[in-house]
Image 1 (tube, rainbow, N blue to C red):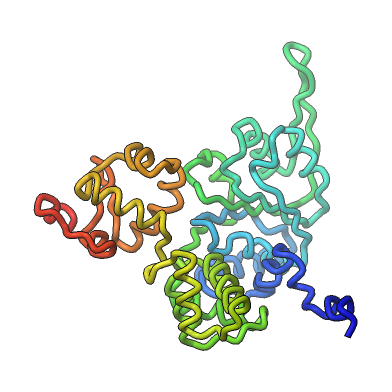
Image 2 (cartoon, rainbow, N blue to C red; image 1 turned 30 degrees about the vertical axis):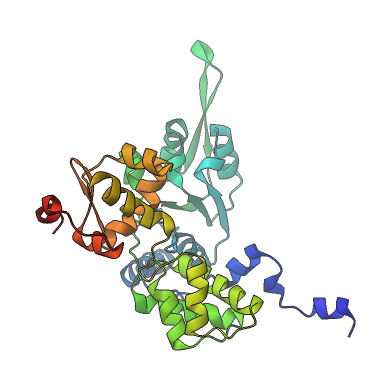
Length: 342
């Protein structure tokens, strides 16, 4: 066979990571696993709006990264047969950028803004009348000669997503009249169901035991689960092995993911607090300096999962490793800390 012909016969979703991630995204509500309460609320919101022949109200989705906020936005747009225009907070640098986006919307469009908390206050203020009254107020000129021009916008629905809802101003949050919904972490069973679907799409033959092992170490997050599945598949392919439980464990060990889903940095945080600061309490700045890692990364990426597992506590005096955290890294709980961490 001609090598070029063989190359052309490859699965098209393998050509780029971007198309691969899109292929794994659920196409309908039935395929979207988990977040049952949110799905039902959104279904009622959309169905009621369609029944009244009105544009659905604006919706705010928030929660940790990788839980499906972007996917929900795509499904909502598909449910009402609307075009989805997607952008992000960091991409909208000036008021003119937002004005260009809003004025180019077609009637009935859904505008999705990811990481909306990164909009600056001046742009937020332009959003208020756009969301509430469907108009865009543009200030032309400066000083005494400045004047305001009001442009009428086509009916649209804004779906915003954020991982830092506290950074949104109260006036902006209050204008999401369709509802504000918090996405929760997934159960191991839900993650396993997502992985089975992903394995089928990717053409991976993985047994129940292998799927369960990956789900157990996925930090209760679908995005992480799919990442681990793809890396385990790659490990099996390169080493010409079947994707059985033994291969999965070897692949995850190479990625330094332990049985609780902790990576090396997670374990380093616990180890530094235990070994250098007697289990805590210790301040975030001190942990950051000791680990040579940014404070925001520790606080937003690593600590939430450590706290979720009960390995770490945030106290008024600083971070403290719990008894369970000591046991996880094989350290003995100091007598002076036993009452505090138990």
